[in-house]
Structure formats: structure tokens, C-alpha cells
Length: 275
Image (cartoon, rainbow, N blue to C red; front, side):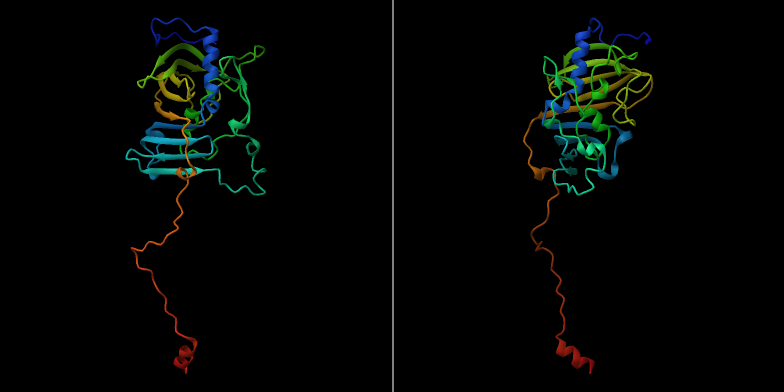
């Protein structure tokens, strides 16, 4: 497919070779297998904010696998909690959908490449309704940039996205990242249709964190106005206890408030009063 010429985003760099493109796509598929937990800050675009929950501006996200999440605001106040490790799974659980049978990434083995990135990934347990902001799913697992497996040489269409430029770099924290300029191909299918990482007809700059596979930046360079996505990795593979993701259940009486006492008359007294 012919792509219109555009000024290079990374002047002085050579066009990406097939091995560089393969490595980038493998990294985009690998996020679920590169960390067991994440602590990240995310700048919520105005278009996707949920003011009723306080989910706007910059928030800090604690994520443990795909089973628990806690989000706090700028003042470290807790805004949102949700977990699935205590979910009651009754008789209708397995019949709910095909995804009911999908396993978490830790229990399935993808096909790894020689550099320990995912070449082909199986169907795994999705986030479901765990995330209060759907666009987070694309940031935390940006496999839509590469698809679940390499494109077949026997098919007419290429990979989901065209990689125009690639560059290894470091972010402002010194973390290793991969920057790429992409446009959507015929087989591109966004994970969240309402917020595709590569909107049709655009060229975008995406930045993937090399150690986690998480997308930490998406900027549309040309082709229309779309919100920027920005995140920052604070930590990975930290240990988080269950209580961080569950609402506390009160077990003590608040003695600061008087307890009401209901006085009932004895039965004999009631009969005398009635007579």
C-alpha cells in the first residue's frame, strides 16, 4: 500500500530493517509476560475522563496482573478499587462467554523468540470490566500494533500497522524505550474501538517501554486531531497485598456517635394500659 511522503520524525536514522520491525512487534505483544504487577502514572485525556469518580488529570495506577486495580489521585486519595480474586463464580460463570475459559498470562506459554519476546501469543484472560477507563487496556497491552502473531506470507495484506521509522532511545527517567512512527494497515483492529492507538488515515508516534512493553506515549503527527496518551512507569514486579484492592469492611463500632436505644414496654404493662 502506497504511503504519502512525510518529513522524517528522526532525521539521520536509517530506515528500519526487517529484524528491527520484528523486534518491535514482538515487544508490543509481550506486555502480559513482562511483569506481574505495575505502578504507573497516567495522564487521563479530557475526552475519556470520568469526573464523577475523580478520574481526571494525572492518576496513579496500581495493577496486579489482570485481577486487581487501585487508582489514586494527585493527593494520593483513593479514587477507585476493583478486584476479581474474590469474585463469586456460580453455575452461570462458565456459560457467560467464551472468555470465561481463558487463562491468565501466567498460566499459558506463548511462542517466544530468541530474545525472549513473544512471537505468537495465545488467547488469554482479558481485563473485562476491571478497568474504569477503557483506553487503559490499549496502553497496558498494546498488542493491537502488531497482532497476535506475525503476518502470513501467503496472505495479501501485511501486518496491522506500517512501521515507517524506528529508534531506540531513553525517556526522561533514563528507561530504555523504543520509538516508532506508524500508520494503520488493512488488518488493523484496535482493542478498544473508541480509542484506537493508530486512528485510520493518521501517522502516529508511539513509544514502548522496553522492560514492560507498556505504551507510554501516543502522539498523532498528522491526519487529524486526537488526544495524546501519556504514561510513566514507576515500578514493576512489586508485591501488593489484597487489601490494597478491596474496600475495608468495618468491624468496630464508631463510639464517637451515640447508639440509639429502643425501649419496649413489658407485656404486662401493655395489657394494663390497654384495659
